[in-house]
Image 1 (cartoon, rainbow, N blue to C red):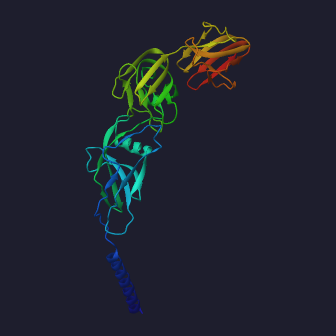
Image 2: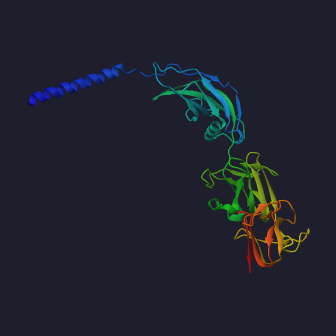
Length: 346
């Protein structure tokens, strides 16, 4: 009986071995023989990408089919590399396709260019190719040279400097500028400065460190990523900075309270407030108010003034939005970072 079992086992093993050998012998050999050829775009194509056009289709990359010696599914990858990386040792993927063309978006082209290390907002020549891939086998087309003007925008712009001890990790909301809209390069905000400072980009996950991009002095009102420290006399400023145009401006401000609920609406009727650096708010204590209305304005001038149209404690800029006041003595605070205010009756 034991001998019979051994015979059956030997026959079964032989059958499996025979099938495996036949499968291997019948399996097609995959080997890249003919590389794809880029037919579009043409050498010298120029792409200028901005936050406004990033979601648009920029161009259609097209190529001839690659050959791998059999009927196989080929994945094509559009890649870019630095000019001195002719072997595409460190490429960046733009987009993939299983057909012989792909419509490339500005967003993907920009992402690949920034990852490659191009200088934002500067037209930079790079190599582009299409690579055909089947399993572990791949073959690339002859590269062409194109130019990409990419953009890079941070979610926040920090303002480190003497005023906060150059503490990059401590760039709280009091020392941050926000973009006008997500993805835009123009930032603004209120920051107390005291001597030298710089602008510092945050990462996408809102982290500030000395490894991020700095913007320093490039001349009057001009920013330079390699520039030295900027400087401003001690004071509270409304700051604008544009990391695409590489410009900035500082407006020194003193805030006050005006209105018939205080002294009046005259040119010199402002109750000047005091800035509390520890709390990052403007304060006026023991203010006598009357029944009426008040507003907050800067430098005893109109334009950019704040009121509260819905009386919810949140500031509304300009317009018919007087803050209603009732007779009494108040401690008043103005928080421009968070766009809020308080009237605390004593």
